[in-house]
Length: 264
Image 1 (cartoon, rainbow, N blue to C red):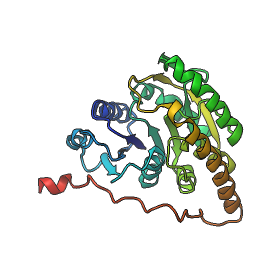
Image 2: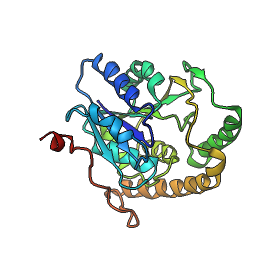
Image 3: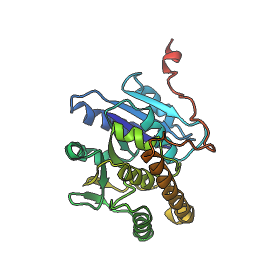
């Protein structure tokens, strides 16, 4: 299993997440890797991570400039080696208790989307009311525009079969946080089985995302996502490779594999 953790200015909690992942994944008795994709953090995130890098199970990819969460997740998913690939936001610690349920659901699915509203969800701390009042209509709009039945599109805890991740994320184009809507819609339209499972979850205080500020750009991104899904699915049905986006620069080179260099 590969676990992809997108991170931006996570110095306060990233070590706890990595330790929680180690503890949970070791209990399954299967090989695993943890890939932190640092989105040009401006704090001590990389410094905090460095003692945790072992050259095998934990590694870091760093974007030289802030490229957005969607870019970071895509980079991690396509760099991963696991037959299963888990998207785990940097505040996903409480949701790790639900990983067995996701693994069980994966027996009959290619993508399992964690959900804070589906049956079985255990929400310890809700988002602030103002955020929920803005978020609910946007999720409804997402589901209408993308034809996506998933109730909690933007939950940052999703398990992907490796083959589905390779096919879908190679076709993803959104670089911002709305990418979840694009990849779920792509997965369904490409014929992969998508299901939703309730998970344990607790809202993190001090969230960096202000939905009100990004709402209008996010609606534009949804329209871009719908166009891309149609183009990518059409190309796939004709047997063409994933069309490349000529405006998209190549991914940055991997950074913090230099811990061995420092110790040499």
